[in-house]
Length: 363
Image (cartoon, rainbow, N blue to C red; front, side, top):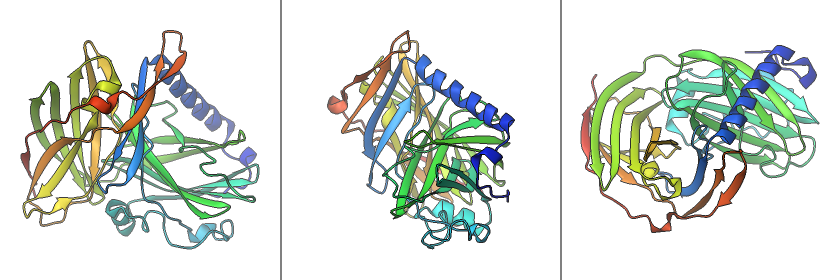
């Protein structure tokens, strides 16, 4: 565990700050460089609402995760006023995060940065086949406004912004001065098994908190090749593989559809229903998708996350379906990087019916 620091000027060192700032700057430039971004709302598998924001290169979705509060023994003096309800991960409704805590698969950080009398503590990190999960605590001497730090941390991989990513964020109010949060980061594309994760959080009054921490992907991830393809009503779907570990299950896929308007494309609205050989559904968590224009098509990539499989599961039946948006909007960028809001245009989208397919789970 890293040593806790009370003043931002003492940590991180200037070279770490510079690397993170550089990476975040690259991310902002990448966002401006892309022509289209879109956002919409739809339901996750437990039927709770969420807002999804996707950018054509740096796709960032802020969705709904269940979060609670965590206080490690090493932080007792710093966080003595935070309500004690256990670990953020262990007390969440996520079976995967509970399993990660149970099996000691999370990296406990416990590092605190304080700016303008607001302390942010980077608590735990989990890196598995579904992506990166981060828990942190925001504590102020005065009453905190709702979402004072926006929709979570920006991030870099070895000092550079990722080409494409999505994720989710939710904070939970513990008191008038305390928030806890879980943020999920899903990087689209190949990722190293270990790297330096740079994190930066902004406050409404210009505060900035920096963190940099080495992380490593958990071991014993089983990848099951699928390579299932189908085309329904002009929507192409290719399911690449299924990954299974103690912390969860994920489905990696690519989808596409002819068109130029992300708001009118259904290929980015694909979700999956997963049922085992006994007819028991595996709980899933809707997530973002990275979308980009490729010639005359809109192409999307994503990893959909599900709870860990029970040891008795030998076969899964997977049914793709569309979770069409009911409201939303977007932002369009011109060649000069100037943006303009665009209204919601997805109300006329029609559902389709995909075919189910089966996947054997090797022991």
